[in-house]
Amino acid sequence: NAGVMQNPRHLVRRRGQEARLRCSPMKGHSHVYWYRQLPEEGLKFMVYLQKENIIDESGMPKERFSAEFPKEGPSILRIQQVVRGDSAAYFCASSPRPTPDEQYFGPGTRLTVT
Amino acid sequence: GDSVTQMEGPVTLSEEAFLTINCTYTATGYPSLFWYVQYPGEGLQLLLKATKADDKGSNKGFEATYRKETTSFHLEKGSVQVSDSAVYFCAPSYHNYGQNFVFGPGTRLSVLP
Image (cartoon, rainbow over all chains, first blue to last red; front, side, top):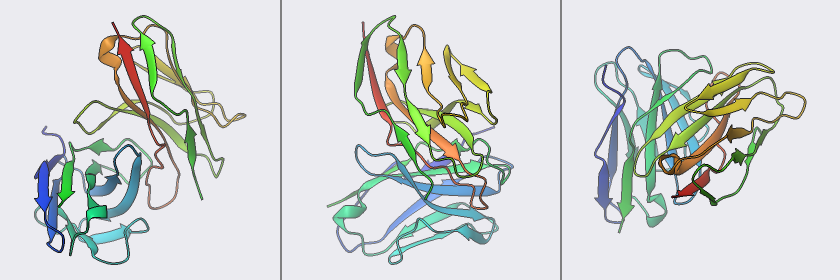
């Protein structure tokens, strides 16, 4: 059973461009979570999705950020018009159930905005 | 809001030394408690967990006990190895519908040979 997969692992964007980060959850997992880790800081929750639904986006910035988890295909975190402050590691996690249980993390996408 | 306080790093120890990383959480509800570890360049991996008071989670020589009376979940290991060098995150998971973890800032551990 493959683990959580994220791609790309490294992404470089110029200011003003769009960044698309992809996350394929573990097989059988229908719950996906996105976290952001700024340099030398802990992980901050961004958004929790189930298939085709956003359940909790309380950690998402109000502008430029969006997330989706379509019926088919990976979950996508989209950042429009990136700024230098968006440079961070973005981690995706998945779980088989919505209970407060273990989440399985992907290796992360490191976004660098130049 | 819900929060977690974790011992600041970096922590530098010699091999075979005793390790303690303190963690306290806000007592909103009755969270499940987790320790995650992040090795350089990798994502987080579950190290251990405890879901109710007085439970002890253990794995790879690490252990932590859910102390409801002190709202703490301190991580301990009797004899650390160089391979334990990593960042350790304490993470309560509160039983709200969002089911998201509240991660501590992480404690970087360096073990010297």
